[in-house]
Image 1 (cartoon, rainbow, N blue to C red):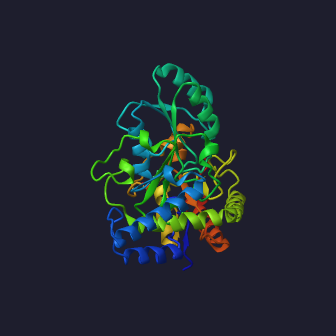
Image 2: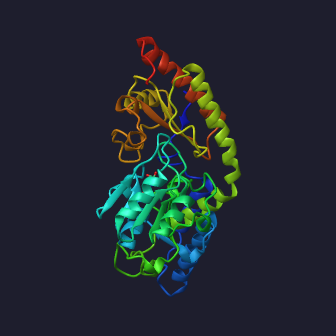
Length: 373
Ligand code: PLP
């Protein structure tokens, strides 16, 4: 059976060069905080990776604070700034689950933040806030107008945190040009290892650490560094930056796949398709066929896709993202996420279309299901 891994937004296949670099780093002894030669070697490896990650988003290496992943980077930004948070309604759970004061700002039907509502919320906040806005959404790939958000936020003295986890390595990300105070990144979304990420911060010294201990990462993130993971992140970031232009080809694969699905069922909803999206992501509805059923059926055919944002322990919950976009619950429950990436091929896209068509014929069209409104 021809297999196709189309769940890069959950985790991307690790790059072979990363496996090699991580194995090398695992075999090298040394704590980056030790002053002897072993320690200094480990320190050099961490600092090299810091430069590589900074290179991916064109920031200064000193701005990069390594974390255990995107979740911790988001947590560090929100807790670290210590302010009430205004977040778009489509943010990841690692933003929306913030235990402090949080208010959500609505998005339009395409999933783009409502800038007037943001301004009204900033006016109403009274105190300086942190605005949390993702660069690209994990379920739909919709790209947010981060720079415009930052400009509005500045007028109200707000700090701006951007979740760049899904965007980095898929579209150009320039930390300074975004105009934000901090940016969350995660290695495993771009071909690096799981369990390592970074918060890129304009003024890392102003962040209140969420973990305390040995003062690593200049006191911003205590705990002995995950040296091998950080090395892998660095290599993945460097390759992603080098190969960014190849994402245009990936976008063509995605667009062609969507066209062919629409050729089978013209009314198949593709959420966020009318605005700028990542070249990799597609959120497609199969009317009347629950996402869980589709995911299992695709899996039986050797194709990996997911139901909404299935990066959270395989649970299938109704998508808050599609809900915020005004999609009716019955339609939202029938949407799957197909996500391409660096290793995707035309054969993967062909297989997706083949299985989608067979499923629709067997489960949808044959039952006389009407397309969703
Ligand atoms: N932010 C977004 C937009 C994501 O898609 C994810 C992925 O799960 C995260 C944050 C969390 O990243 P990590 O898995 O590295 O904790």
